[in-house]
Length: 335
Image (cartoon, rainbow, N blue to C red; front, side, top):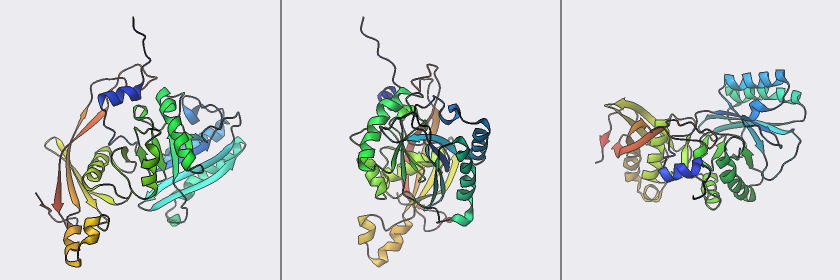
């Protein structure tokens, strides 16, 4: 009898060809708490913290729908629970806010609710910027694939950006491991490997996001994430905030999402165009993506959970460029 191999959700997802576009969890706030020792399966919720401190941090995060993640440097393990903490907020295009602090005792974490209030304050627009933080899910106690696939990716990225990279607890989408979440940019990447991840993140740091490993932008709905990925495939890599969703409508059983490319100066064709052509080229930077949404058949989606579940599935049916110089007008098809 041949040996039985343990089920691995990421291997199964790749064999099935599960699509990653449109799978980024929604959210624009994140709380990071450094914990250098082993992580419980349920992450922050499983820490042995003072009950009152835990309740205060949890309530403040819940009020803003912030995701609380445990973090640690790659390769550094100790029994010490203390370290750094941070709050991150994607406030809007180019308005990426973060606040860092340190904690040694549980009481020190009471500063987190105050920091969440500060990053949420509109008066702080453009005042709390910092370098992107690269979070690699390596939460083996939650899902084996996150550790097996995540840690080599964390090692590769940490060798390149040692001050920016952290291993983190569960970010969602175990079957897409290795997963990298860039905050406060709000960008999820998936299906990364140690030999490919540096190039993907290097492009991100240089202001270019490609479609191949993009799960989505966290400030967009799933169908909008899929449409942006289709736009990146159609037009090529672009900056994090180079696209805007003009509209999303459900008609005749399909979604029609219009994506506007805001920076026409990106790309050789537009840069080389004469002054008379630039206005027309800019007007063409509108794409209509027609897609269908369905549910998969029940399948095992994680390593830990043997029960089967369904997942959303999106199919891009049609992509076409429109002539639309301004929102509110009726675009004309270029086809």
